[in-house]
Length: 161
Image 1 (tube, rainbow, N blue to C red):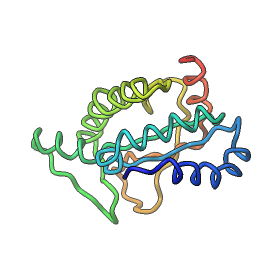
Image 2: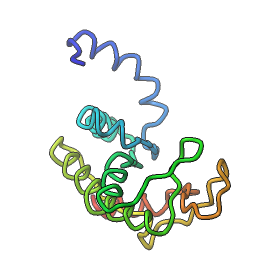
Image 3: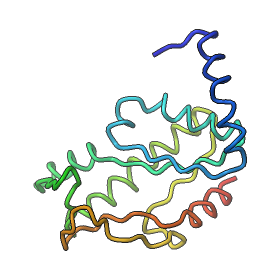
């Protein structure tokens, strides 16, 4: 979708109260793998813009389509319950491989190409805070975690500046 100059100006005027409110704040943005796959540069350009207007964006991304594709290539069947991936030990290895070896480096490179700054890190990074088990499904083999704090991400972001 391409906006005219007038439409862009209108969007910025409408965004001004939010820019003022969140200036200097860490803003965590969760983007699913499907969203990144379909509108990557547009989404990442918005993240770069947030930094330019004084926010400190932290991008938490998925990679579901690429994880599923790699799992299938390796002969693993993706399982879902209530819309959430069930991640056993073998699938977790694929998740780590895809996210840290492909998706994250690709996103970091794209952000740099778009004029931003980025540092990639995984949930296995030493400064990452442990999360908690996702309770929506309650299955015992699930490795899904939700971050409690982003302190480790803040440290990594500042180290990349």
